[in-house]
Image (cartoon, rainbow, N blue to C red; front, side, top):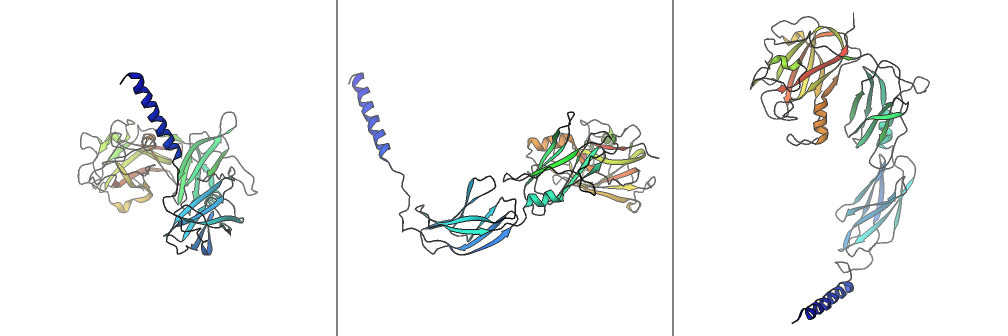
Amino acid sequence: MNIMKKVYILIICSLIILASCGEKQLEPITESLGKPTVPTEISVEPISGGVIISYRVPDVEDILGVKAMYSLADGKQREVISSYYNDRVRIVGYDDMEEHKAVLYTVNRAMELSDPVTVEFTPLESSISKVSKSMRIVRDFGGAQYSWNNEDRESITMEMLTNNELGNMEAMKIMTTASQTGTYALRGYNVDPRWFAAVVRDNYGNVSDTIYPRNELGEKIQIAPLYEQKLDKSPMRVVILNNDAAFNDFGANNENLIDDNLDTFGHSSNGTMPASVTIDLGEYVKLSRVVIYQRNNEYYGWGNPRTFEVYYSENEPDRSGDWGQWTKLLDCEVIKPSGMPSGTNTDEDIEAAKEGHDFSFDIDQKPLRYLRFKFTKVWTSSTFCHLAELTFYGDPNVE
């Protein structure tokens, strides 16, 4: 067979295959038993930003489930499908308490729809509305502190804003959280009054108005940050009381905890958990916060602290380490942004660890000199603790 004849045969075969493909029809995989009947016994339960619609599914063997069609504020039509084995659909995403409509259909396995059933409902106050109303912005050391409540534990995105050099409001921190409560301090500013604000978003396209701190008359106001500086570590020293853990094992050194070098670290011995260490700041200071840095080759792993407590002593502590001489200041937990298990770190996790983990002191806390850290839990089952650095901020210019 010559080459031209082979080419001709291939062309003919290709045309036959294409023709066969063109004739193929997409049909339901299950033959219809007839148009499905509508869902019955419908009831509504308003929830935050939406509704739960309950119903009874027709007792027919080819029923696939129930589909609800609805629109949110953006006008786009959405749908949610619940299987035959469920008796309700959940619709969320509204940011008002006005009357809305959803249309229910029964769907069979042949993908046929029943006649529509219109359901009216009025959502309860949305999560984004409640979070926005709870937002508080108050002056803090070096900036402003933001705090809020999220009782529904809905995923909410916070934008913390302040004015830039041109006077325009700019988002300096964006974070997404589903925690029931939250706080964040926007810092690094001098004591001159400036604007601070917040914007709250949800996953459904809803956005709050810009939230400002306000005075008693309801007028938006600027905030004058309290003075803050990173404290000089030259007068500081690590004190190991009788029941403290020395952080000088595995090639480490106690003084590495306050040497301003994130490549060195302190490391307690095996079997020393919980592990405590005492810091003498060298002078009485109005503290604003402490920043803890993890050992940098084991982020969120091994002996890096996960939970710890901070105590203070009014006077120079007794060498015995008697805890009766110490008053608790803080209960702290190092939060991993991704929530992933130890050993799996996202870029956000690593960035948070490099920046250090901030823990703020009460703004009314009196000046302190002697602090004690009790590390109660690490990121793995290790019986030792290690960390790179403890850094303190505040105002040393106190009487």
